[in-house]
Length: 369
Image 1: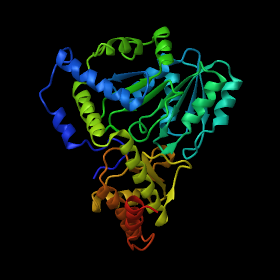
Image 2: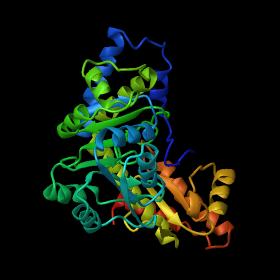
Image 3: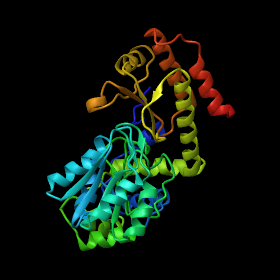
Image 4: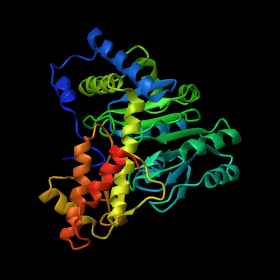
């Protein structure tokens, strides 16, 4: 049972669609698929433009940094992926300022505003919606709203790799939102998507950079339902299938509601058995638990209960475990995970098993509080 926060399980109907005969990307047949996929992505994002890239999410992060920073970037580092924005700036000799917090601490609106007020060179802000290193949710929409009041020309780029497909994102004041195929979109790794505002598109066209990750080139081509370079045909076919399936079966709002409920029920179940939720503001993409027993719990889950969950990285590698909520997680799978965690805690003599986790989860998930 794969319940890591990416890659997530790929549904059987998507695997079947991707297993069909390979088609050439420069054909009317694929252009039709591409067009239909773009239309579905516009519905998902609610933004002015969308671009698909044959890369991981990091490729889209690089594309946004290089194409949308003219003078100086402000990056927010509350984890491994916020840190990555700074590393990308450094790799391209792009000047940047970094706000650094503990991995369980969201950045404040005031800290962003202060940085912008004190440095008129900052023209682009890069931040995670969900920092998946610790399962943290930043107040990105509020930050964007206040920054735009201060200076509407500052570009706001949000890494939504573990947020798109998980919750409804208010993109009103966002200029670029990134996601990757292997998270809530339930596909194998290898496809990235960027939603863009019209202002961002104008800035990209004025400041086109790079070759493979030149977003001006891609936007021009993708508006004609093709790509500048070889398209990730199989993944785009799979993306069309999963988005069409979600739309047909209740729509995106229903998926967001179910994911939020599952996340809430999981947090309640695990806190009921003495677990400590790690981030101060948890994201719905995953539940992150802080415990010195994380490696032992993960090992018991994998070897005894057939559950694969993720640990941490860097300095909290052995101090947290993360349970995925992204995608079409079955109710019985989510129930089994919290039950298995309680059983593992019993085996480690952390608490006696009495079925509390499963009971609390079921109550929250199916009966309400």
